[in-house]
Structure formats: C-alpha cells, structure tokens
Length: 79
Image 1 (tube, rainbow, N blue to C red):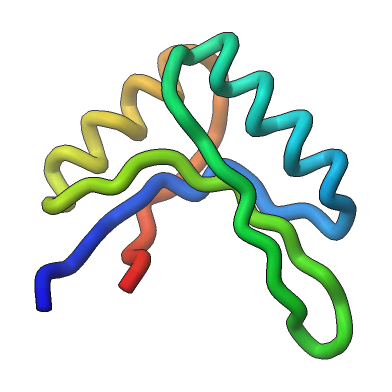
Image 2 (cartoon, helix red, strand yellow):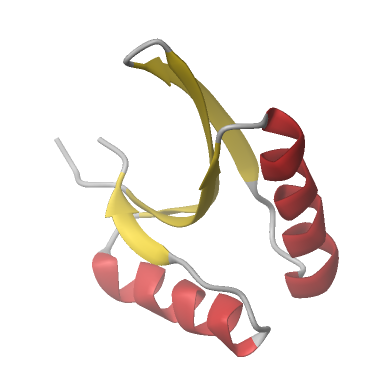
C-alpha cells in the first residue's frame, strides 16, 4: 500500500474551534482543509488536516506554503 501524507494544522477539544481554523485556512491560504473528529479516552478530539499527498516531498512543499501564510502545522501519514 502506498503511503499518503497530510498536513495537520491543529487539534481541538471543541469542534467549533477546529471548524473556525479550517475556514480561516481555506480563506487565508486558499487550500482545502477538513476536520476529522474522534474519541480518545472518552474525550472528543477534532483535528484539522489539509492535503492528500502521495509523497513526503510534496507534503513538505504544502507545509512550507501554509507556514508562509503564518500558520503552523506538521506532516503526518494518514494510512
């Protein structure tokens, strides 16, 4: 199976905060992002991701673009 990479832009306990960041990134950076919600140890966690990169080099370029617009993040494998 091929590795898939994404940029994680944040993680929040409140969905609204994750959704606000997702919308801010889409309008400020011009890239699509999405919120993935799950439960861990009985708590809801909402993570903001962008991208679906087939190689780490492409994901690093995407991250550099996001950082150039003033947002933090890191590359992570999604599979």
